[in-house]
Length: 119
Image (cartoon, rainbow, N blue to C red; front, side, top):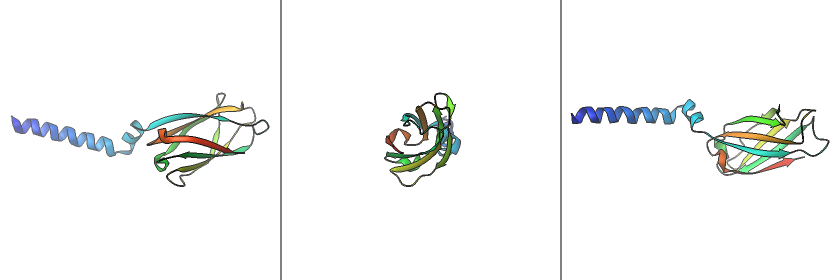
């Protein structure tokens, strides 16, 4: 009886470990955070560089959505530079409103504390 209980616990522990290590599981447990972006007048229809600051950002693995008033914004360049700096280049559509949202996903996404726009 004791060995069957131990056997079940071992199977459960292995399943949890596999879930924790697999890439799809990482997406399951990934943090997601929205930030508001404001674009100055006359900058819609142009490329904008954003500088994202925080700690542990090398594990932020994707940008889910960048939207300006419901209009999807094209992410031209997204690259992990270091653990505390994440440059992002976006193309803002001509018909976009000046205020938008950007959604970062990945481990440590909640550690983002500032976004600088390099206009």
